[in-house]
Image (cartoon, rainbow, N blue to C red; front, side, top):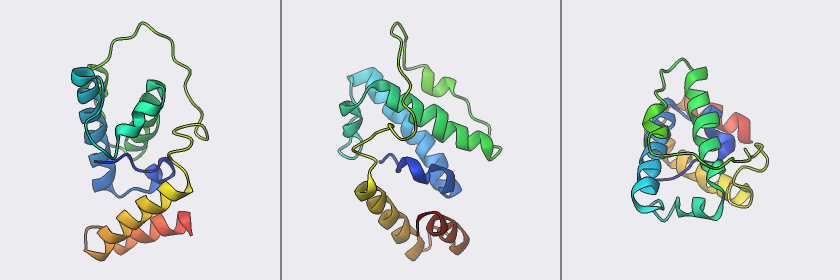
Amino acid sequence: MRLWHKSLIDVLPRQQLLGQWRECCCIASNIAKNGTPNHILVNKINDYSIAHFFTYTIDYVAGEMKRRGYKVDTTKFWKHFSFGDAYTIPEFDELYNGWHNERYLKQCLANLEEKFDCGGITSEEWNLIKSKHD
């Protein structure tokens, strides 16, 4: 389980983008049940306002899915939250600032490159990712 670096969302292969949506919904469920996610790679979301998670999930992941023409039922995400507080929505540059940095981007790119090397990502998908981040 991971939150892909925010700058990769628009070039993630279909499988990883759809998987990211499922993982965000799972994280939302864990937050609702336990007050926190339950995975070492995503526990860092606790260091940020919940608005970062909402923005990442709805604006970027679900937004990219809609841009590609996929149907997205956001009620599966929002059903885990009740709202009484107002949130300041972070801008892209502020989103997970300090975590989604250059080092984390390199880690995510290495993970995607391994998927390419093992046949889980096509050459076309990998070239799209590389062209954005070379």
